[in-house]
Image (tube, rainbow, N blue to C red):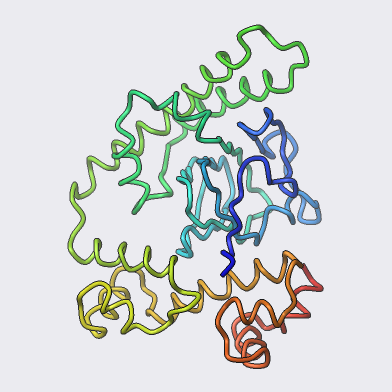
Length: 302
């Protein structure tokens, strides 16, 4: 069974409009100096493309406007001076941006960022990002991050590379990432130190769902794996996320189907089989019900 979210590394993001890059270790993108227009291809390429980075972390900071994102299929709305920090393996999709939205973003290969965080407790950051991927930095922090980002971009674009080029880049990255890390750490201290049993159950359910949804879409299967009753699991999932178990199934299936169809690597029949539908026609009706398009018409739009 092929995995939908084909492992996407920093070396495989050819379609992503990049402002500056360094080999396969670091990619920057922003619209700070040249804001997107609604018709710009860069804006269109950024929107509605579910992606899951592997062996990489990413940071997205908004400076103005409203940006809507799905993180792990959960919707968030970002405003001025908010940050989105994503660890490896999390599904993310930018679904909408207001015309006045300004942002900058960084994608780091793990081989490049681990040395920067080597003496910090990454478990704290990982725990915080599990329930708080979007955090408000505030203007002062965001301005300092933007200043470091501008210097980082300047050195990446400079054709005259200094002999300590990598060290200079890591210095600016350290300033930027530590500022963000400090805010997330503060939020972790303010939040409940240990998640409740229901939060833990929901997190475990989502991990199982991401692994098994292609073949198992019955609440009883997940309840059995988690040693709870289907009714209890359904209540907890709804309370923790505002979505029913069935809606989570649908979200995962549709996101995966869109990605597979958009890739043009498979026929519609193959996609329906990969997602464990009994027939192509059943898959077609299901897809149209949830998107308004037939699989073929969606592929032609992509």
